Length: 151
Image (cartoon, rainbow, N blue to C red; front, side, top):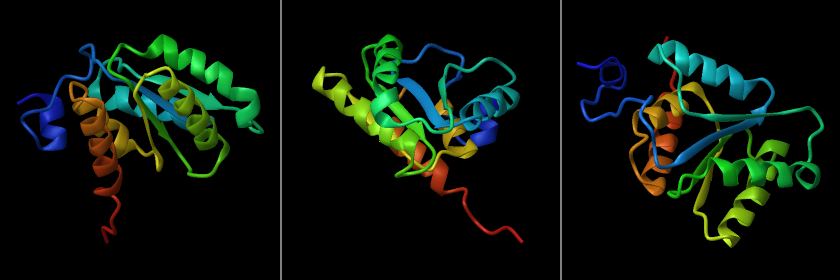
C-alpha cells in the first residue's frame, strides 16, 4: 500500500508529486503557509506542488490583491484555483476574496476554504486529481474531521 494511502486510510488516493489540474494555493499569515508546505513534504517525503503566499504583517487587500491575482493567473492550469487560507475575516482571507472575484470575472473557477490546517493540506494533496468542487469538499472534510478531543 502506498505511503499516502496508508496515511489517509483510502486506497484511491493519488501521489501528490504527480501533476494536478487544480492549482492549490496557501495564503496565510507568515510563516504558516511555508510551515504547512514543509510539514507536507515531511509527511510525503518528497516535494509537493503547492504555491505558498505568506502574508506580511499589515498586508491589506487594496495593496496586495493585484500581486496575488498575477500569481494565481500564472499558477492556473486550466481547471481552476483552490485557495486555502487561515482565518475568515483576516487580511489573507480578504485578499483571497478580492482575488477570487477577479479570477471569476476572467472565467477562471476559484474557490476559497478558510480554517487552514495540516490535515486540510494533506487531504487536498492526496486528492489532487479531483475537480475543483470535489477538491474543495475534501479540503473541508480534512480540516474538520480531525478536530477532536483525544484525551
